[in-house]
Length: 134
Image 1 (spheres, rainbow, N blue to C red):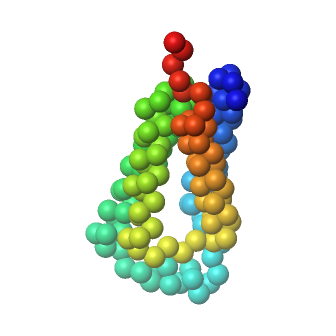
Image 2 (spheres, rainbow, N blue to C red; image 1 turned 90 degrees about the vertical axis):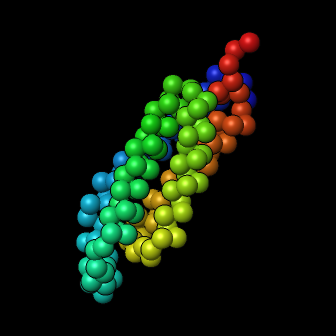
């Protein structure tokens, strides 16, 4: 793949990833309403403690760093690819902190985001998209 095609592919992947993140963020505001009644009641019954606020704060931080890395990738910055990789590795461990309950559409969208993220990282690291001209 030549450099121009790699850069176009990278930018299309980043725009697609931004779109799926935006849709996922919008759906997250009413995702509880998409759950079955029993799961919705269980989720509401969980007490809100310090750990929940800490996880929420980390998630907001992760979303901000994700957006910074995606904007950097739109401008073909190599540091942004490294930031995206670190954000993905570190913030995927949030799922280990507490159980998560989400509707099927959110899980489907999350899987799509994972696939797009992998494609973006593959193009960023294994093609000439981010290589400086000699």
